[in-house]
Length: 105
Image (tube, rainbow, N blue to C red; front, top):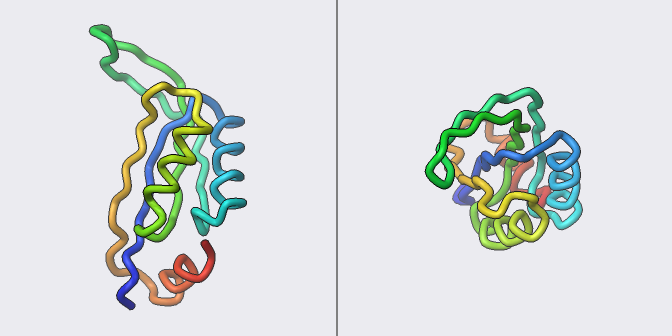
């Protein structure tokens, strides 16, 4: 299979935001699947200060070719002014799972 796939990692301010964002990504066929993981504590530097917040992690599986529209959709629907969105390549794995990601979005 020659299709490039991506595993997208992003943080959201709440479970509700992650769920709504995941729903939008699925409805727009920009992801085959999203996973929502609650209860993450984040420590980070922002605007010269150290912050600690509770966040929700959202992971999406998609095709690399959709990343520009995927990112624009996240930016249009996210509460953060500068949300963390990173796409990592999916290498290897069960061929049937990889084909499912290609077929869905």
